[in-house]
Image (cartoon, rainbow, N blue to C red; front, side, top):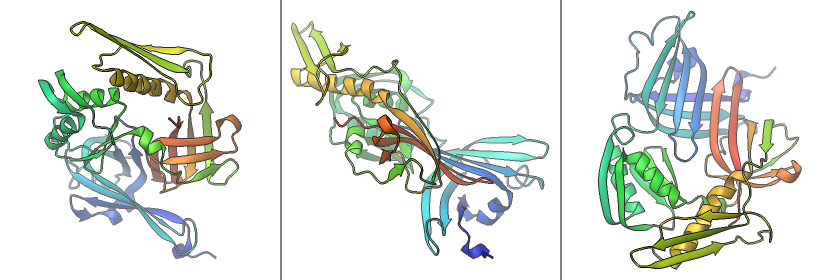
Length: 343
């Protein structure tokens, strides 16, 4: 008979306001989920707990801003005697739900300090002669986060207006227009170029028929037409000059729709760059899927994987979102994926 210490299992380790509460949590835990969120949204965790003894309604009741550190540890998962860990980072409690009978609570926490006002407070400000990295640095500082700028390109702006929107919304909008993605994760404000992430080697190959694959879905739709090229035209009335640029990716078909763009630019090179970015933003939506796997601590947003055995859907994909779940059903990992463009 297999002994408990030899069994394949995953355990959750929790530190709450600096105290190890793993034992107390394990006795009451019904499910735990970690959402390694898509770009533009916050990472979060959720703990669902039975509360027959009313501990979480009384002496242990959470408060907004309580700090949680969590880690998933796998034991004998891939082979006997192997122990691996997936640190999930730091989170702050922002939601508490209570229901019954039987009494149960759910504690939710996010990766952004709840005391930060970068999501809620509207601000109006003019920025002169600045860069995206400088903007991100100021937002990170006000949010109490460390800036991690992982894009080679650092777009500059002669003038840019933040008009009555929050710091985070303004930064997200500005970065998205420059094809740079944003995440708040592990007490860091991360800005990264998805194209650069796409070029990294795949961390794994997921094969159809493998026992670790619990479910899958892929789709294509005419709602997301793969454009063969993008054409940007912009007339600067002050300079009395018109910039026009066309970008066609390597290997593009000779026939097909052309994406028409009209965005403010200040040079011919900027027009070509914006045409490329606009085309990427449209075409990257054309190939998506999802996989439900046996728990896999290797998976994380921004990493790439290879897909094999699904015919026309085979190829290299980037992970857009990743959910790690530990509960009565064991340990599972769900990922949302997008096919890389290669340009």
